[in-house]
Length: 327
Image (cartoon, rainbow, N blue to C red):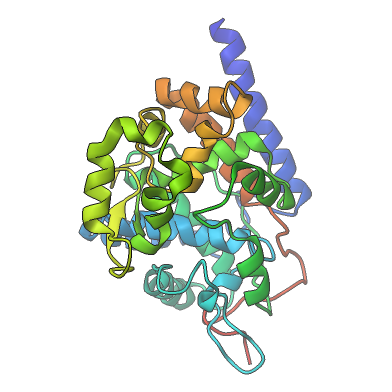
């Protein structure tokens, strides 16, 4: 049994390496050109996260929102400039996406050590991994070699980044658009074990009449605590933790909250409410009962996500400043 488990883990790792290699990504991509890259990124991320734990969730979310628009190409980092309309102004990102200054600081340090060598997309990928590790989550080997996009798409950001009020069917379709399946949907939703959400994002979860007869009513104290933060109108920018029990740690409490009907977002709770007895619901229960299983699944899915439509070779560029394409 132990041998079989080890074999399955090795199979996942080998499959991830195979997929990355097919995309032109390899772990040692900067071995000669920027050998201290991961140390440079890691030191800055560690300093920022230890000073403000919420930075970890911010950097992980940046990676997610980048990969869901045009692929993992650093397009999320571009500011408005000339013909570029920044994805930062898209509805799912505006006034809520943070961590850009941390990436700026990392990029400046990397540029000083290895000028025009390392892409912003790769920096973002490493920073997301380090953020998870620093808050108690699993580690994984990051394959590198991504290049940065020359464009951004606010239209695609509005279209493809999942919103807090989506139904389960809409979430499944959204992830499928990126080449991700329901297993990836459930595993990557576990990123909500860290971070916060604004009142405007979870108001429907509190006041929508379609929920008044469902399982939420069994936990009225949680509903009451949320309504005190987020009234029916106003206070849109008030925040609540996505995981109220361990909001700054990467663990499996997000799933434990779901099975206790205490998920913050509508799009969290539909994993159970709209899949009664299905594979998605069973996986939520499995992750709630087994943190190790969740960690293994999360690693597999985030590696898969990090390979979405990457630019390699002569495509794109290596930006000098992550906020602007090179002159």
